Structure formats: structure tokens, C-alpha cells
Length: 265
Length: 265
Image (cartoon, rainbow over all chains, first blue to last red; front, side, top):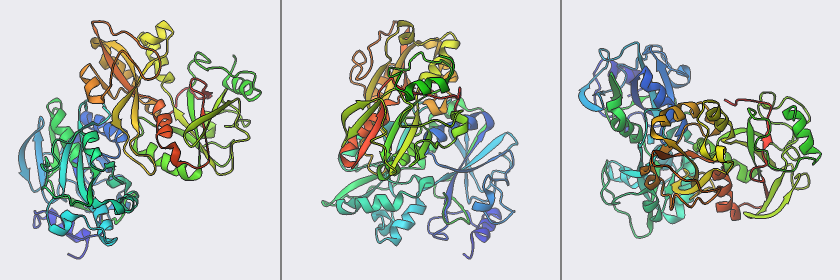
């Protein structure tokens, strides 16, 4: 793959419809949520109130090719939010009804699309610092847990829990890991908590049984380190989706948008 | 009292050294936190990551009279963050060591001052909508509780709990109360949770025994409504204050800065 722009062209032509992990490392990848206008207002407020769990990178109102901060994120003018992700999940009243390679028929002028930060970017930085997460080394998916920590409510979004990702690290390197991930403010930034006592604070049911992703062992000299996780906004949609009239669209997990940007501030 | 500017002049001359509740209603009042530069960087990040609990209205770096957004907040040039609050709490290593009418001797060029939003403003709006909080009607202090919901960590700030204020309301008006307080984004905005089941979600020990302020009864047709509370950053300072070298200064609770602004967006 030569450039993000040519990769997006492949997605647009439905020639790449698979996951994006490992594609063009160093380039920011983004999650997607497309909502009808009224729900979008609540969602944007939810994100403003909970920027660590729900970091908005950009949005587009009614026009599928016109992103806020477009030139900082995407270098070409052919971008289309309805086609440039490899795969889309189509939801109705909070239920997944279909997976498609584009959402041209579902998008309406009433829809607002949000690009949301994901943690792939800080994983790159950790790898480059010689602190590759164990799940990356093993080629498994990161462990993700539903917590009893709730987002600060906003509009229709009430009782929506944080989802956290967990990566085990040796105690001695936790401060370094915090420092490395801290600047990635649009990709959840530094860990929100760490240590075995954080399991209780976050109300995690069983550290060996993640609600999403794969389990990972924690060695005797390691502790769990928890970051906010991009599954949080998706779980929020399932939680209050029955209140949203009209179609909601997300990316299919793992099937992200690849941006030209290598850093988003 | 004729104007915020003449009230601040009285504070500056130490002719008013008492609380500010009921002073010039309609004008925004602000909390204060002054920190040495290094801790200030962590604190600012904490606020960015937790904007509902710790809403920064403005800051001043090294210069006690020069606020960000000065002209929007303060109409006169004689403003001085070291003298214009009625009373200051002086802290060393997280311990309160003195209360003073100014902090001229404590302020150094290394200090950064933060103005932080407080909920007085949205209480005004509730009163004007005929939904005066019960504690306002009774002339008591609002009930405040320490929760087991923790701020998303930032720098030296770790394991710092949310403090919430609680105002009882009838179920039928809760949606209206949410709508009225929602626009006050720099003053904690809409409630973060509500209902008796929120007591469990927030880990509140005993609804009849607030950790700060006065207790208030909840009638049979009422439920508790919880907002983020300006005591949160102060409790954060007590929690990690031992890690901060140098003097930290806050306003004495209830002794706020009165701004010319009537709304802060």
C-alpha cells in the first residue's frame, strides 16, 4: 500500500473490504458514527463532556465529503464518508440490521457523521519506544471490559458505561507508558487508571474474562493498565439506540478509516 | 452593590472579606486555584480530560492581572487575581496553613492561576424558571457528596474522586431541570446522574449525611438529582497535594470572584 489516499480509493471501489490493522502504520485511523441530526446534538454534547472516552476528531454535517479540519486530516478532495471505510454496520433502533461495503443508500441530508479517535496511534508510539503491548506481540485483540463507571450524562445519553482496554505492564515502566500515551489526547491519551485496585474502582467483573477482545495473562511482575476505549460510544448507542428514530451507521469493528494525518492534536 | 467592578475594588481594599452568595445575582462567580507551573500543567490536563467536574473559565500564567478572555469576563484593567477575591486559603503540601485577605506575598512569577466555574449561575436560572432548589428556598448550603467515581487520571492527579452536589426535584420536572442547566457548560452543565439508583452508581455512602454542606430531606414524590461540583478540584489538591512542592492557593469556600460576565460559554 503506497498512500492513505490510494488505500481509501480501494475501499471506495470496494476492492478492500477487510480490517485495517497493520495497514499504513503511523497514519491515524478513525472510528465512525453517523447519526440523525437530533441524536447527533446529544452525542456531540456527550463527547464534549466525556472527551477521554469519546474523542471527536472531526465531523461532517449533511455533506458526506466535507469534514471539519479536512485539509489537516485528508489530503485529497475525493473523500466520501459513505464509501471510504472498508465496511459499515447499519443499525435501526439500536439493533445491528446489516453490514455493507458502503452506506450511500442509508445516508441522508439529515445525517451527521463523526470521526472518533482510536488507540491504534498510541500503540504505534509504544512499539517504537520498545514497550509493545503484549497483545500486539502475540497478535491477539486487546482485552476490553465494561465498567461501572458511567459517562457524564448528556441529552438522551444516560447510564452509558465506560468501556476500557487493558494492557499489562511491569510496574517499573508504567510511568513511561503514561508519558508516551499522554500526548495522544484525541486517541484516549494516558491511562485513566492502573493497578489491581483499579479493577475494583472500575467495577470490572473478571479480569480474565473481557467483554470484548481476547483474554491476556498478567505476569507476576505486571499490573493491568486501563485506557478509555473507542467501544464506549458504540455501547452508548446500543444503550439508548431505542430512543433514536432513523438509521444509525458505524464502521464495522476493526474496519477503520485511514487518514493522511500521522498525528491529530 | 452597584457593579462587579466596584465590588472587586472593595475586596481589593479588604473592605469586603465575607462570602459572596447573594452578591450581584446574575453575574458569574468563579472559584480559584493557583498552582506552581509544573503542577499547573498536570492540573490543566486534568481539567481538559474532565471538563464537567473541572471547568476552566480562564487562566493567567505568571501575571496576576492578565486573564485569558479578560475582556469577556472582566471590564476593568485594575483586576488582580491576588486581591480581588474576598478571602484566600493558603496550602502547603496539601495542608491548609493560613487564610488571608490577599495572596500578594505568596504569588510568584512561577504561579499559574485558574478561574473555575461554579454552579451559582445555573441556580439563578432555575430560580427564574420557578424551579428554585430547595436548599436555596431554605437558605441552607447545598448537600455535597464524595463519590467512588474517579476523574480520568492526568499527570500527578490519580485516584481523585468526583464530588457531586444534590438537589431534590419531583420526577415530573427533572427533564426541564436538565434542559435549563444544560447550556451552562462552564458551570458543570446538566446533571451527571439522577434517581435513587444513581446513589449506587455514584457510590454515595449515605444520602442523609453529605460530606460537605447541609443535609436536605427528599420528599416522597422527589428524587435526588446530582451535578458535578466545584469542590472536586479542591479535593483533588488535598489528594495529591503532598506531591506539589511550593505554595498552592485557593479561594476560601463561598468567597468567590464576581465577574462582569453574566454568562460564560
